[in-house]
Length: 537
Image 1 (tube, one colour):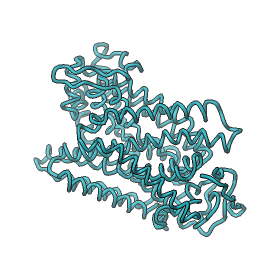
Image 2 (cartoon, rainbow, N blue to C red):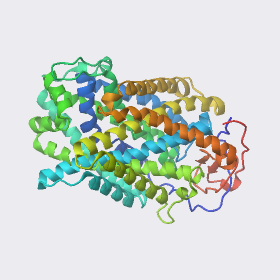
Image 3 (tube, rainbow, N blue to C red):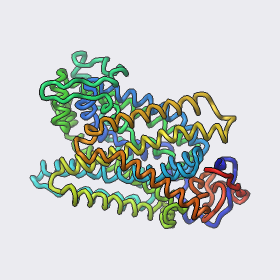
Image 4 (cartoon, helix red, strand yellow):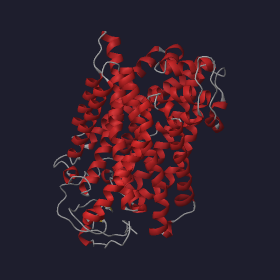
């Protein structure tokens, strides 16, 4: 059984060169960093048409309502865990403390890969929309790999500096997205009145019903609507990764989780409801969703709200994909940083900038990974069709892969929470907070993964390679398990550090190698002691 990290165990160290910047952001900053990862404009304009056209039709808003409820239940245990373990590793640290270092490292690899591929996925979406916008203004087509790589390079440059710079950029983008989406919602409901607005679209039962094929329209499957709804939240769970850089992580991280899920849930559900309410005819709605998804929102915005909303959306989809890519870049960098400072990956990844305290090495590596991924798609998929290649393959396939890995990590974290509190904090073990809520979250998210795999041909846009996404996700997790087993046998000192650098109290120092127990960063690090590892884990 692993040593609980929050019992005051620790060790005084030598300097704080490789610490992230403490107290860099407050609650608002963490919210900007996480909510922009969810990229509301991107989620609505890209995911709602699929949820409608290939999922549940008029029941798409119910899918977002169900996802809101499930993720709120998940957040109950996740928030409780974040109050006990403050670590930049997020899933990696939580699972390590609850279910052991080997599974922790496996899911840490899985999470790092997920967030790492989300950045090029967003870059693919950005390139698709940027090319369309440039063409509409100038008549010129710019190769999508150049636009995508350019976005990644700009992000790498910006994230090299203080986290506050990222917060300002992401915050501005988020506020603009929310304002325009609300304008769309208000405009649609005001024009539609009681004609097309149906409360039946919000009935949770509607989230579990597809529709049969009709004429030229393909059938819809409930699993598709639910998966794309959950996909739209990816990013909110990143809050614990910024715990070490926030003012009061024990308060800010749980609050940001609840606020993120609730705010996004209300916005997503209402916006999805507004979008289907703009169509009075089922065939017209599903037909546009299946065949002209780009204009599923833009068409009604122009006709019912005002051309300015449609124009604003066409520009904000660019800032949304950019901001989402930047948020995922920050999180992926912090996973690489966490794995590097614990010597699971090369130690250089665990370095922070002497001035900005940013994980600059990990950030540059993440930028390089994203460029390589984009280059591979350009080589093997081609670079002459932004719709099929940048949007359909880069954005589509990488987003599905990353979402499967994150949902798997969230499901495993739910189990880890139950075990952790039962073993290490029995006095805080609660029937709902640390047992029933995590158990329900595990079952729900495991079910969504099953639905995704069962409908992978549709989720993957009909691409044959999509059938390899689930095996690839399993391979990533398996490599993490194998790597942990190797470390346990060959590098036990490094193995003992997996998921064990945490923050306690006020920031102080981080140690280099420590073969046993938990590394605790705290105000009283000089008084800390080493906790010997117990067998197992």
